Image (tube, rainbow, N blue to C red; front, side, top):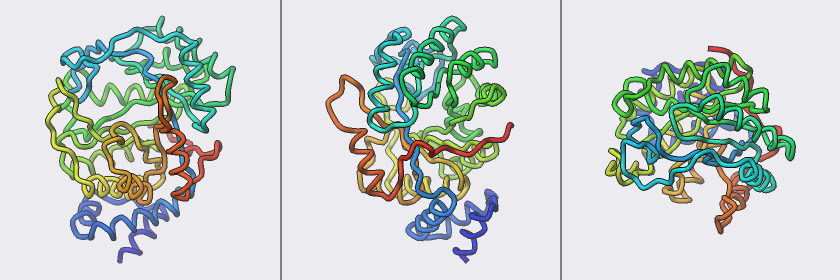
Length: 330
């Protein structure tokens, strides 16, 4: 019966919510993980997609997202600064590309960036592209088609805009913008020619059924790169005292995301530092096949080097041609 379900998914069958819930409730965890592993192997192969980011504008965000240290609604002591200069961004992009990381994204706090700020960052992207073959991504808030086109023409191939959580749960975590606002940004990004990266955060008090709804929502809007952040509770935010997920709950979530999104890159993202290495390895076995990684220039350590070794040890390949498939418009 289980092998039958796996074969159906591999051959393009889309599970219903009821079928996913039945799998979750009626399948022993280790069996569930093995099923997800087989799906990952058959639908995604050995490619592992890597990206790195730089926080190009920090703090003082007007939005009230309950998980975020950069919201000015909460006192968290986060650093506040305006747009970084081009030289700093280029140096960071080159540094991480030299370690084998394939994508580089500028990430900014705030609901949106002005046209002036976007034009400034467009020049930064052009400078980055002139020095290496790194693929450029952007995560710059809620943007319209005009500003997204400026970025696309500067070399940005992927736009990141997280949906964050299930549609029925989002309003409990943020009231200053909606998922519909985010969808409009995603639609605009696709219209100008960009691919889309969109995931969210687990462990914010949602139920497993909420996570299943979230994975189904991402499937419905055709996302093929899904960052799965794990909440890192931050003092001063409303979610500061949320209890952490158990290893089983985290791994089961990864497995269910793979069942629902068999052809998506499921991406290690924020909060990974909290996860024991044994669980990290298990998640990669089950279905995680991409990651945000990379060292900051001023940081002593070997996160990128360690990740590249781990990718190899787990049987994945970090070759440059790895990418997610062409998306349909929504």
